[in-house]
Image (cartoon, rainbow, N blue to C red; front, side, top):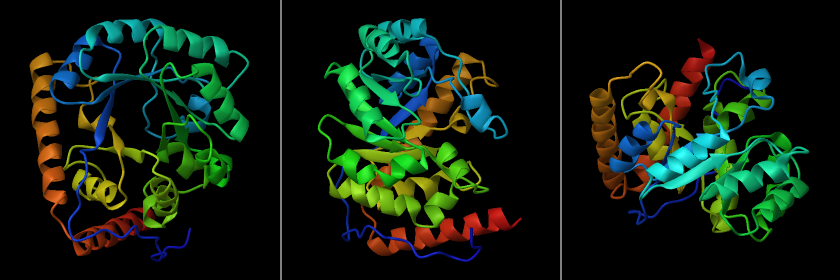
Amino acid sequence: MPQGIIKTYYIRLTKKTSRMAIKLMYIANEPRIAKIAESNGVDRIFVDLEVRGKAERQGHIDSVKSHHSLNDISRIKDTLTNSDLLVRSNAMNSESKEEIEEIVSRGADIVMLPMWTSVDDAKRFRDYINGRAKVMLLLETIPAEKILDEVLDLDGIDEILIGLNDLHLQYKMKFLFQLLANGKIDELMNKMVNKGKPCGFGGIASLDKGMISGRNILAEHYRLKSSMAILSRSFCDTTRITDVDEIQKIFHHGIKEIRDFEEFLTHQSYAYFETNHQEVIRKTNEIINR
């Protein structure tokens, strides 16, 4: 990875943007946490079943490694009244049809496929769901990136999220936001936005947290016309914070801050987003050069 600033592919914005708020997703398998998230405006509660190969791929980095179960889908579904239930399956394997059938029958509104590498993976996943839930692909492999144009021409693929953790590891990068700084995310998002496909990338922390602040990253979501983002573990880490009142406070203030900043962003000019992007590049280069 060259250390200097690399040319990026900007999605040009008009002087003001007009758009819906980003759909926020939060990973949880405890009903009380899911209810707190929902009551404070989280759009999607995310049950994560992926275990196949994840520890081997990400064991050396500080990423979320959930230990959720099929029973958690039913428990969370029974809790929710407004938010959608998103479930990540395992990558395609010999047991995928049975797993996806169980996920859908337990009430998932959206099912996410990780680590797909072929058009056939996407087709079979779509066919197993068979219109009973939304189909979301998690783009996190170089082979998937190379066939994105073909996948975008498929019927029945509802949304695509770019997974920064695995994709930056495949590129042997030091820092996941290098993909944002070097133009790769611009290139992929541009393709999806131009096809009218709801899409997004990675996650955001609270606005003033993160190696690169949540403000910088949320502005990048708006620059790239992203539709969705995961609230990262650092937004509210319930493995460390167990007091329900404290969790409620974090969600109440954190989501309000995000929505207020989104309102601010809708009134900013292209120059604002370009300046922010250059700041993300500068901060990324500082981090990887340390």
